Image (cartoon, rainbow, N blue to C red; front, side, top):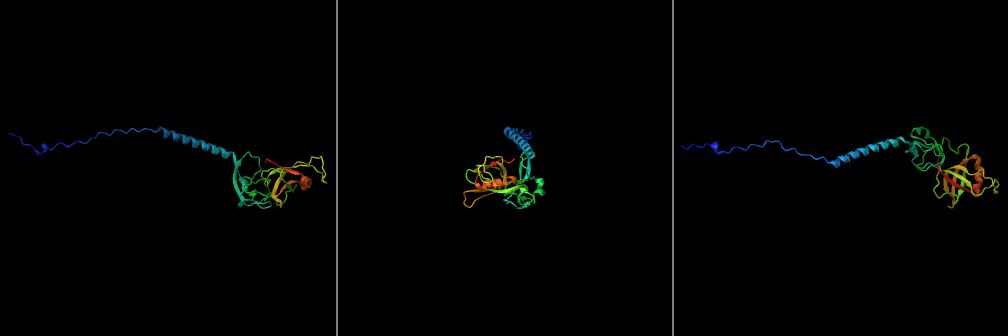
Length: 224
């Protein structure tokens, strides 16, 4: 007898899904990227240290934001801030001196960017007590080729020593004389430079006499 074949016997068994875990993906660390990150961290740290150290060695001071002419009062709109090293031997006005510098007067012409100090500003208008203003005409060879500006510290030396009457003398005790430049301008002919200087009153008359005779030369000195 032949056995009947059922419907289920003709249907192939369903394939069972593969439930095995996927193979782990192996990751590879990128050594150059990690090294670059470490370098950036180190550089950033060193930069912060340098900036903090620099900040500790500097001080914020006042400079002029525009030209201030001799005799002009200084107000807050003229002030700008700048950082300089603490070791500079200048009697400057710092950020803490705002109330002291406002209301003072420029004792010399101050170009834009000039440091404000007790030497180039004054509490009163006019020539400071104990000093006199002398105009000195100078030609080529009597002053440096470098630009002379208000506030410069200079020395006036004799090219030929003269006595009060204009006669030659061997007395060199009165010269050189230290001075501060108050203003600089060219004469009408354009051949001479007139340098106004603040000098001790005791030396003013002698210097004026020599200046009129054209027997003075100017030496530019460093500040401090």
